Image 1 (cartoon, rainbow over the protein chains, first blue to last red):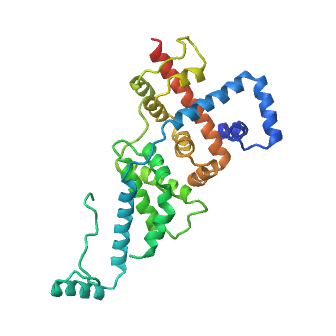
Image 2 (image 1 turned 60 degrees about the vertical axis):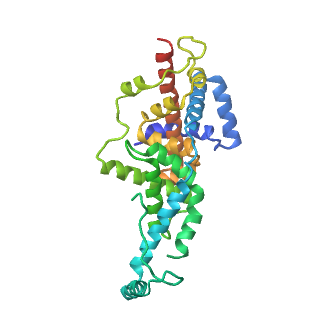
Image 3 (image 1 turned 180 degrees about the vertical axis):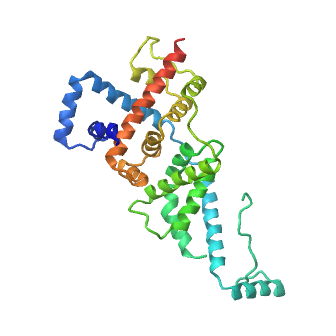
Length: 115
Length: 182
């Protein structure tokens, strides 16, 4: 089914440093003798170096954005699991007292501005 | 809201950089990689606590790839299927080493590596090879992690990376020779 992949697994394993010492030595000898195989190894190296050029750090602020989105999702999950009576009581006390002190259950925004 | 989301963030945020690398290279046309990263983390959070294998990094990569595919389907677009000639034609010229015709592929490519050209040529690779290269060479996953993320044998991953790298080198050389010496 995937025969090209299977055919190249030994060379791929050699290039990834996954072969044992004896097999790796045999591959070294083979590559010294066969120009075509040596060329394949060089192309592999070029491709790897080229792909590594594409590495770039995550933009600043992305971690905060992700953390906030997860926090919002967690809040939504908690609200969904809370019994309806607790919600009603919390909303009522916030309205009646108008107090935003500790322990109050004032409604909070569940979604960030960009959603 | 309790400690579970904090535990989730502690376990997953250290991998934000690699998830971003995957998202950056797998997001479809018009899809913002940062949106894809956020979607990945939200999906991961929803599934947090379920079996995620031995490696959180591989688990996150699998979710990111699935999210990218879902979004591509949703947009009813077929990503990465532009004609090769069109994309190669749009590549910036590469500097050919020494100006010699039919120079060695490696010499030509190394002499003129350009991130935009690499990105364009990477997009031309078949998806299985491209995804393996993105995970291993761009994001820094091991072959074992890549195999776990993709659900295929490690040997297959290594072979695909090998094929993909060679093809990528060939495409870059082709772009460099055709543009640098005409």
